[in-house]
Length: 364
Ligand SMILES: *Cc1c(COP(=O)(O)O)cnc(C)c1O
Image 1: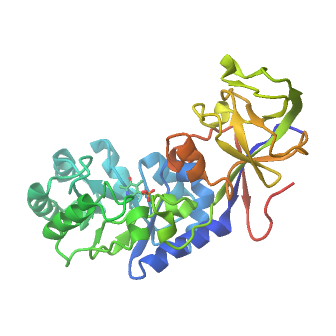
Image 2: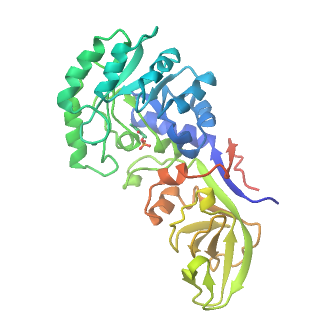
Image 3: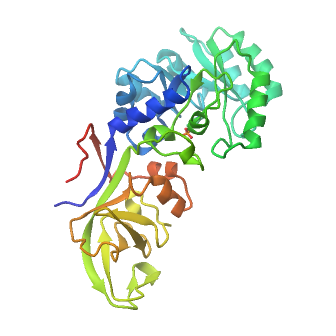
């Protein structure tokens, strides 16, 4: 048997999670956020699976948008940072891509552009995120300028929340109020990411931008407050070694873990070379034969070690789940002081991607 380091992607779960977004915000259009290779789940398989369910896609650059067009997808595609250079404008026009407009130079570049098809724009307002967008006082004039340009088609409002993952955060209320003051309701707009969608925050936004929730991980601290999502990815590897080590024996580089007693130690075929987080501490859970077992010792490039005292019958070849239904990616991320987003995005090409549908769970 060859080395196992496999991400199984459950397409049904993807569909389920999109339906949760629809249920949360029934009146809104959905732009499924597919940046960073669909959060490591595979741009084209995810895009195709959601094609009949979503109204549009959001990506971060032409390199992510053009494959969708080449694949024949005709949806609205929004580039979340717009064009990075005026030279990209003709491509936006020719391939019917929507641009987020967040800097004055972009308006100037559109004014100078010589394009046949006007570009639909999303005017981004920085209501408190402190990242991209015009400050509220500059948004009105920016809108007037855009509307005057022949190279511009429709213009919609956009903003992004900084604290929607936290319940009832005062910053969220303040951002929504500022957005309400700037964005006139006569114009289409978008505010909610996954967190705001799951909270049902709906300040007249008629487009939602769910990302992480589509992949089945909750961004909320209070994840029990919303309908359950289904994890899409199961990251699996296999036990390649099982042996007893005596009390006092070190495990891995630097002997970070020292066996407190004679105990069974397993070695698993995955490491930071696959994108498993190198800073995972002792105790980070993995699942073997339905039992939760703690990681022990430093993560190596190709391997991790696990304490098998919870799974005494485990043997070489057994499947090991790094994240999926159990443990959840959010649980692993919390143990590693990061977020599920980063775990998903950091998977390397060495991890095999397998796509499954229906009850076929990909075991074996
Ligand atoms: C990535 C991104 C999203 C999606 O965020 P999630 O938390 O994954 O739902 C929405 N809007 C913008 C501007 C983004 O960059």
